[in-house]
Image (tube, rainbow over all chains, first blue to last red; front, side, top):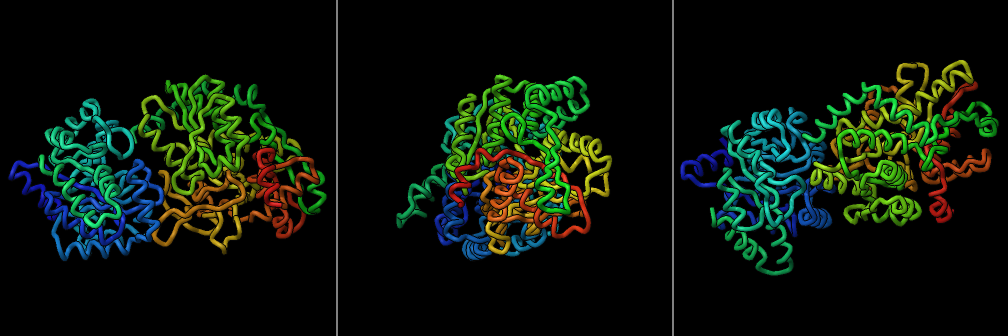
Amino acid sequence: MNRIERKFKILKERRKKAFIAFITAGYPSLKTTEDLAVAFEDAGVDILEIGIPFSDPLADGPTIQASSFESLKRGTTLAGIFDTVVRIRKRSQIPIALMTYYNPVFHFGDERFISRAAQVGVDGVIVPDLPPDEAKGLIASCRKNDVASIFFISPTTTEARMKKVAVSSTGFIYYVSVTGVTGERKQVSQRQIRPLAQARGLTDKPICVGFGISTPEQVRSLSQKSDGVIVGSAIVREVTRNLGKKDLVQRTASFVKRLAGVL
Amino acid sequence: MAMLEELEAVYRKLKKDAAFKEEFRSFLNEYAGRPTNLYYASHLSKHFGNLRVYLKREDSLHTGAHKINNTLGQILVAKRMGKARVIAETGAGQHGVATATAAALFGLKCDVYMGVEDIHRQQLNVLRMKLMGARVIPVESGSKTLKDAMNEAIRDWVTNVEDTFYLIGTVAGPHPYPVMVRDFQSVIGQEARRQFLKKENALPDYLLACVGGGSNAMGLFHPFLNDKSVKMIGVEAAGLGLHTGKHAAPLSARMFGVLHGTKSGLLQTPDGQVKIAHSIAAGLDYPGVGPEHAYFQKIERAEYVGVTDREAIEGLKLLSRLEGIIPAMETSHAIAYLEKLSRRVKGKKSVIVCLSGRGDKDMETFREFI
């Protein structure tokens, strides 16, 4: 059992929901990423999602896109990100999932990527542009190395595909609360949340909701229908807002604390 | 995934639907101007001496390039699916124009994503799209060219999937697009095969076409798949030269990756980041390539070679001077390869070149280059 699975077990015993925070690796620097990870654990974050910046972030809206380009421009590499996780692990045992588009994994090699990730202390991977049908190699490597493989369900996912996603996922299942890309929305519509109940009936695995969530109210309301809530763009925007400030990490952590605090 | 599965199911049915096929054929003939001629280029042939060169005149189609074959096909699919809006990505603007054309014809709303870099290079095509009622949406992200336009189109599609049809312009992207676009473009090869057999009472020795995403090449090649004696050569854009790294030739460079739902040739850095392609031809300026081309390369059914910007310019000049036909900058890559082909063949050989588009849109680029 890895850190993500352990976390959900503990949360379940305490009847609590998971707060999952996303940050872009290397934005604005890998040292900041390391410090944010540690500060987030104290702020009440249950699981940290670290995004590997990619040249073509197809599933992301403008906020995360901009952070990716900026991170790449500053020279962030895969090797640097793995080293950062090593440094985080010296200071924190927060469960970590890497969010990455598939090409960097494919290029590195499925097995090589996952075994390296496991070795540095990563607990799960999320690959938004890789459906389970195409992920046989990746899933096998994940099982072998005790790394969770987290796949997506969206409002348009058919029941047959939900079952496939449920079987292929470990750790948790990622429910996309909107049709579209990441980024804050004023409102997450009830219609797009309805299939969540359907998915609920198909699996015992934890299901967490992400995309479009930015306020404590949204966090609270969506957590009632799921096992956890994922916030990304709103946190990255907070990092952006505090760029250049000495207390960027503290400011971002207190923003996160306000969101995580409602759970 | 749901939208792709739905599209695949619909397309699979339509592929066998006689009424759909008849409607498509009728629009190709009556509206786009098919069949196109297979023209024997006697001066070009004489120039090389050992080649009998035939030009498949896709440049004579309505809108000036082969792209219209595909957009008419896909818009008929969109109509059958009851979509009110189509979106497209475009590089050189040819696919954007062909999409705007088809959308105007069928009265659908049309948004075209285009990199700002390309908008500058292809202002006349931007004007043409607007004139036909399309909205051209400038893309500022990434390299501001074709791949980024495709990123934005995909983001739009996943957001507005209910009423929107994504009309991809080449044999790339997620399944079923590579198959669907190939089928719609195969009319090029089907006609060329029939026409060549009639004229020469034999099959050609070579097929030659430029490859960016590779739709005109796949359209020409695919109907000859089982004609084992026919050799196929896809010409990629070698830009400033393969050794410089500034090119758009993933197959020639033997780099493979996953982008836009396709595993195929892909330009990338040692860290798996997609690299910006370079070509003088905006329509070839894409870091990926259709997956079936990668497959043809792997099974050695087709060969992929590179032609530089400079060589392509010479190709453009040669065809203009000898035959009075100004080819598109993209097409000029295929023309330019004739010189190399002529040097490598033994005896007299026949070749069909896909003259995929006309060069009017490229005069500004041409003037800047010389």
